[in-house]
Length: 507
Image (cartoon, rainbow, N blue to C red; front, side, top):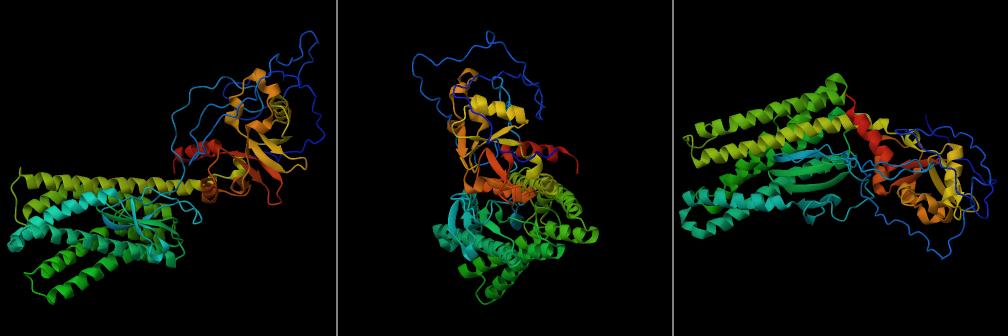
C-alpha cells in the first residue's frame, strides 16, 4: 500500500526533559508498520525519571559512513519507529541494479548496448583503461588486455613475415607491431560507425573500448524501433567491408612481395574476417542484433527477438568451440592441413574455447538484461517510499521515534522552523545509538543533509528512477510531490530488494 505524505506536527509538544519511550518489541519478520497500540499508563513508581549523568558526556558521534557508489546490500535493520534489536549479521550482498548494461565484450568489433549513468554524469575513470581521445565527444579507451593481444599479433604476424620477407630480419617485428596498431584502428572505425549511428538516433554513447578480441560501443539506451536497431547493428560490419575493399584496391597498386603489399593484404583479410564474423546471426554479435530486430518486427515484442537471437548465439558458441579447430586442421580456412596433437592444435583449441566463452557469456547477458528491462517499470518510487514524520533539529531521538511510532511511519525528516525539509535521519545512525542514550541525542546529529540530487519526484519509475539514484549515491532520499510537498523517504536498500524480487520472477 502506498504510504501517505508526511503530516506536519507543529503542534506536538516537546518536553523540556524528555522521558525515555516505552519500548515496543518489534515482531520478527514484520515488513509493514503496524498500527500502534495505546501505551498503558505507568505509575510514577514504576517509571523513574531519567537523570542526567554526573559527568558531562560528549555528544554521541555520528557514525561515519561513506557515500556508496551503488545501492547497499540488504542488511538487517530495525524499524526506526521501534526500539531496534542488536544488529544482526549482514546477509550476503545481492546483485546491484546499478547500470543497465546489455552490451558485453564480444569477439572482433561489434556494437554494444550499455545502460549507464545520465549524460550529465561524467565519471572520472569508468574502468575503461587508457583514454586515447574523444571523437564525436565519446571517450575512447584502450583496455589493458589490448596490449597482450597486440604482443600476440606482433609475434604471430612476425613469424609469417619471416617466411614471406626473410630479408627483414629483426625489423619484421616492428612491421608486425604497425600491423597490430593498424588493425585495431580499423576496429575503432567499425565502432565509430555504431557510435555515429547511435548519436544520429539520439541514443547516448557512454564510451568506446578497445579490448581483447576487438572493441565494444557502450550505448546507454535501447533503440526505439526494430528498424533503427537493424541499422545500428549493420553499419559496423558494413564499414568493415568497405575498409576491406579500400585495402584491396590499395594492394593492387603496389608490389605483392613488399612490406606495403603484405601489410595491405593482411589488413584487407582481417577486416573481411571482422565483417563476416560479426554478421553471424547470434547475440552478442552485430548479426545477432540484426536477427533480434527482424524477430522484433515480426512479433512486435523486443523480448521475443532477444530470446531468439540469444539462443542462436549459444548454438553459435558451441559451433565455434567444435568447428573452428576442425576447419583449421583440415585446411578449410586457407592454411595447410595439420596433424592432431601438435602445438598448433592446442593453440586452435584454446582460441576456439575463448571465442566460444565470449559468445556464450554475451548471449546469456543479453537475456538477463532484456529481462531486467522488462521488469524495470515495476520499480516505482511512490510504491517503495516509506512514510515519514517531520521533526525539528533539536528533537531528541527517543521523542522522534515515539512520534514515528504513533504515526505508523518508518522514517524521519528533519525540518526547519518553517517546515521545510533540511535532512534525512539515517537508519544506520539510529541503529548505532544505544537505547539508553536516545533521550540525550538529537536527530540533527544523525541526519544527512538533503542535496538537490537527493530530492526524488514521487512519480519516477523504472530506468529513470535508477538513473536518478545513481546520479547522487546515498542511502536515503527525500521523495516529494510535484508541488514540493514531502511524500516520504525512499531507501536505496528497499529499491534493491524490489529489484531482486522482480528479477526472480519468471518472464
